Length: 102
Image 1 (cartoon, rainbow, N blue to C red):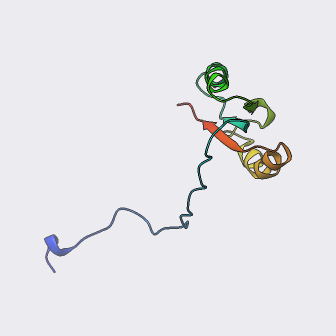
Image 2: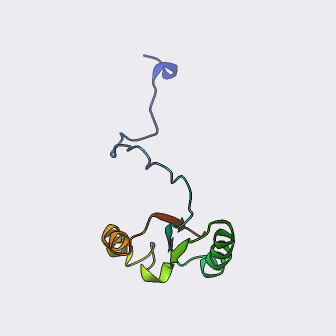
């Protein structure tokens, strides 16, 4: 085998299995939306703007703010993410908006 015939694939073997995405909601009207955030880059400002715009478009929409969950990045992220399904269910959340700053 010469040098041109030798090939090395730079990606590793797959370690996770892809799952289908959840179905989209038909509308956000009357839905409860949770905001998740990693506490980086102005999310505390952005969420207020987003909530105001969504509320003007979708009657009856309600929100669960990011501070109810904890940071999705950093020393507590494993605990925060492990607790997330239970909290979302207990808070009767219909959809989640997750923000990540860089």
